[in-house]
Image 1 (tube, rainbow, N blue to C red):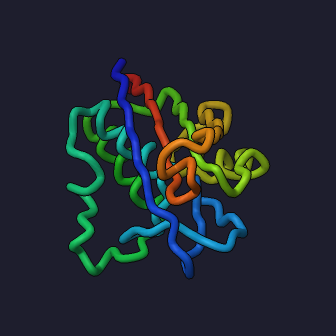
Image 2: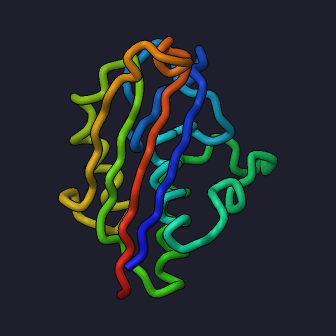
Length: 157
Protein backbone atom coordinates (compact mmCIF):
# COMPACT_ATOMS: atom_id res chain seq x y z
CA UNK A 1 0.00 0.00 0.00
CA UNK A 2 1.03 3.61 -0.53
CA UNK A 3 -0.13 6.77 1.23
CA UNK A 4 -0.19 10.25 -0.28
CA UNK A 5 -0.91 13.74 1.01
CA UNK A 6 -2.15 16.79 -0.87
CA UNK A 7 -2.77 20.44 -0.03
CA UNK A 8 -4.16 23.32 -2.04
CA UNK A 9 -5.26 26.88 -1.38
CA UNK A 10 -6.91 29.46 -3.62
CA UNK A 11 -7.71 33.11 -3.01
CA UNK A 12 -11.28 34.35 -3.05
CA UNK A 13 -12.24 36.15 -6.29
CA UNK A 14 -15.37 38.07 -7.24
CA UNK A 15 -17.04 37.19 -10.53
CA UNK A 16 -16.17 33.47 -10.43
CA UNK A 17 -18.24 30.41 -9.57
CA UNK A 18 -17.36 28.61 -6.35
CA UNK A 19 -16.62 24.95 -7.07
CA UNK A 20 -15.57 22.60 -4.28
CA UNK A 21 -15.40 18.84 -4.72
CA UNK A 22 -16.93 19.28 -8.17
CA UNK A 23 -20.05 20.94 -6.74
CA UNK A 24 -21.12 24.48 -7.65
CA UNK A 25 -21.92 26.24 -4.38
CA UNK A 26 -24.16 29.32 -4.59
CA UNK A 27 -22.03 32.15 -3.29
CA UNK A 28 -21.15 35.77 -4.03
CA UNK A 29 -17.57 34.78 -4.85
CA UNK A 30 -15.48 31.99 -6.29
CA UNK A 31 -11.82 31.03 -6.18
CA UNK A 32 -9.03 32.41 -8.34
CA UNK A 33 -7.18 29.93 -10.52
CA UNK A 34 -6.29 28.78 -14.03
CA UNK A 35 -8.72 25.86 -13.78
CA UNK A 36 -12.10 25.92 -12.03
CA UNK A 37 -9.95 26.50 -8.89
CA UNK A 38 -11.51 23.59 -6.99
CA UNK A 39 -9.01 23.38 -4.14
CA UNK A 40 -10.58 20.21 -2.71
CA UNK A 41 -10.24 18.31 -5.98
CA UNK A 42 -6.70 19.65 -6.43
CA UNK A 43 -5.67 18.43 -2.97
CA UNK A 44 -7.18 15.01 -3.70
CA UNK A 45 -5.36 14.74 -7.05
CA UNK A 46 -2.08 15.78 -5.44
CA UNK A 47 -2.56 13.17 -2.71
CA UNK A 48 -2.90 10.47 -5.37
CA UNK A 49 0.12 11.73 -7.29
CA UNK A 50 2.11 12.02 -4.06
CA UNK A 51 1.37 8.40 -3.15
CA UNK A 52 2.87 7.48 -6.51
CA UNK A 53 5.95 9.69 -5.92
CA UNK A 54 5.01 11.67 -9.04
CA UNK A 55 5.13 15.46 -9.51
CA UNK A 56 2.13 17.58 -8.49
CA UNK A 57 -0.79 18.58 -10.70
CA UNK A 58 1.08 21.63 -12.00
CA UNK A 59 3.37 19.25 -13.87
CA UNK A 60 0.48 17.54 -15.65
CA UNK A 61 -1.73 20.65 -15.96
CA UNK A 62 0.54 23.73 -16.08
CA UNK A 63 -1.10 27.12 -15.59
CA UNK A 64 0.78 28.29 -18.68
CA UNK A 65 -1.27 26.00 -20.94
CA UNK A 66 -4.07 28.14 -22.39
CA UNK A 67 -5.82 25.05 -23.80
CA UNK A 68 -6.78 23.91 -20.28
CA UNK A 69 -7.88 27.27 -18.87
CA UNK A 70 -11.07 26.73 -16.87
CA UNK A 71 -10.67 22.92 -16.91
CA UNK A 72 -13.07 20.94 -14.73
CA UNK A 73 -10.95 19.63 -11.87
CA UNK A 74 -12.67 16.25 -12.08
CA UNK A 75 -10.58 15.74 -15.25
CA UNK A 76 -7.48 16.43 -13.12
CA UNK A 77 -8.52 13.76 -10.61
CA UNK A 78 -9.29 11.32 -13.42
CA UNK A 79 -5.77 11.83 -14.82
CA UNK A 80 -4.27 11.14 -11.37
CA UNK A 81 -6.31 7.92 -11.18
CA UNK A 82 -5.01 6.88 -14.63
CA UNK A 83 -1.46 7.45 -13.39
CA UNK A 84 -2.21 5.20 -10.40
CA UNK A 85 -3.64 2.50 -12.67
CA UNK A 86 -0.56 2.65 -14.91
CA UNK A 87 1.55 1.83 -11.86
CA UNK A 88 -0.76 -0.99 -10.75
CA UNK A 89 -2.70 0.78 -7.98
CA UNK A 90 -6.29 1.59 -7.18
CA UNK A 91 -7.77 4.03 -4.68
CA UNK A 92 -8.38 2.49 -1.26
CA UNK A 93 -9.87 5.63 0.25
CA UNK A 94 -9.64 9.41 0.36
CA UNK A 95 -9.86 11.55 3.49
CA UNK A 96 -10.12 15.31 2.98
CA UNK A 97 -10.60 18.48 5.01
CA UNK A 98 -11.90 21.79 3.65
CA UNK A 99 -10.96 24.94 5.56
CA UNK A 100 -13.16 27.98 4.95
CA UNK A 101 -14.75 30.74 7.00
CA UNK A 102 -17.51 31.11 4.45
CA UNK A 103 -19.68 29.81 2.97
CA UNK A 104 -20.88 27.05 5.25
CA UNK A 105 -19.80 23.79 3.59
CA UNK A 106 -21.40 20.94 5.57
CA UNK A 107 -24.67 20.81 3.61
CA UNK A 108 -22.74 20.26 0.35
CA UNK A 109 -20.53 17.40 1.54
CA UNK A 110 -22.89 14.57 0.45
CA UNK A 111 -23.06 16.06 -3.08
CA UNK A 112 -19.26 16.41 -3.16
CA UNK A 113 -18.88 12.73 -2.33
CA UNK A 114 -21.35 11.84 -5.10
CA UNK A 115 -19.28 13.80 -7.64
CA UNK A 116 -15.83 12.74 -6.44
CA UNK A 117 -16.53 9.00 -6.12
CA UNK A 118 -17.02 8.31 -9.86
CA UNK A 119 -14.04 10.52 -10.76
CA UNK A 120 -11.96 8.43 -8.37
CA UNK A 121 -13.46 5.11 -9.47
CA UNK A 122 -14.61 4.31 -5.93
CA UNK A 123 -17.80 4.17 -3.88
CA UNK A 124 -19.13 7.12 -1.90
CA UNK A 125 -18.21 5.20 1.28
CA UNK A 126 -14.53 5.42 0.29
CA UNK A 127 -14.56 9.24 0.22
CA UNK A 128 -14.33 11.12 3.51
CA UNK A 129 -14.80 14.90 3.57
CA UNK A 130 -14.93 17.18 6.56
CA UNK A 131 -15.12 20.96 6.85
CA UNK A 132 -13.84 23.40 9.44
CA UNK A 133 -13.01 27.06 9.84
CA UNK A 134 -9.66 28.65 10.60
CA UNK A 135 -11.08 30.38 13.67
CA UNK A 136 -10.44 33.82 12.20
CA UNK A 137 -6.69 33.24 11.90
CA UNK A 138 -4.69 34.22 8.80
CA UNK A 139 -5.99 34.82 5.27
CA UNK A 140 -8.29 31.81 5.45
CA UNK A 141 -9.68 33.01 8.76
CA UNK A 142 -10.24 36.48 7.32
CA UNK A 143 -12.27 34.95 4.48
CA UNK A 144 -9.67 35.74 1.82
CA UNK A 145 -8.95 32.14 0.79
CA UNK A 146 -10.18 28.56 1.01
CA UNK A 147 -7.84 25.60 1.50
CA UNK A 148 -8.04 21.82 1.50
CA UNK A 149 -5.92 18.94 2.79
CA UNK A 150 -6.31 15.38 1.55
CA UNK A 151 -4.80 11.99 2.13
CA UNK A 152 -5.07 8.96 -0.11
CA UNK A 153 -4.50 5.27 0.38
CA UNK A 154 -3.49 3.37 -2.75
CA UNK A 155 -3.72 -0.39 -2.87
CA UNK A 156 -2.13 -2.75 -5.39
CA UNK A 157 -4.58 -4.01 -8.00
